[in-house]
Length: 299
Image 1: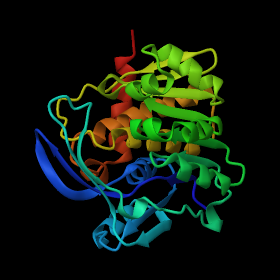
Image 2: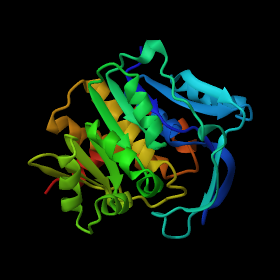
Image 3: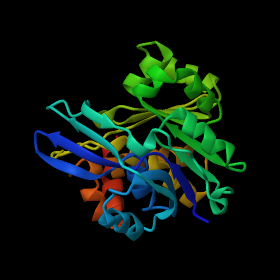
């Protein structure tokens, strides 16, 4: 059995930034999260792709030790096309083709139903709920979402949040979901729904952790070279839960360290298009940047 179960999308992404363009690159919330988690733990991926999904992408995922038992194959792969201008914190969507993901029926293989660590990556909250119904007593559930689901499936999303241990949102989503400009107020509203911790991601400016009585601010890494921020939030979440699965420790101290590792992997991800940077990343690279994060926080 794997250490971490990741439910989300596997996609073909067409992305343009001021620094270049890629056509139908391997992407999707579950792909990024599973890749990031694989540096710390053994992930399994639950999603769906089409018959058009390139064979080399299967090989890329398997090479990272990602279990694909739960990856269904249907007609056509989810495709997203978008671009970034010089404000790299905001993607602008040109086209979204849901294809197979639209009517995806989540089925957790029997071998994964007792998994302890579950990451519900960005996907329809109805599919997130269905995944949770099939998992036996998970030890940690981490949830990510996006503005589209807040706009269109808010009630279902709230139901998922109530069953979640750690909620991940970016700052815009937190303000949107709880109708406030104040992030502290938004985090406290989220905590009242049931999660033990809320993490608000602020892109290049790092991330904030809120628990019942404490607050932690993880810095962003000061990158000189940013090519493509697509998947950075997913990479953050995957590395976060992967590190916690590795340590089997959910203390406040470990949550903070997991955030730093999430920020590190996300920072590397932004340095190239798609998963290109993470394909060649090593644990040594991650630990090197971890030491830099430590020095940035000394005062």
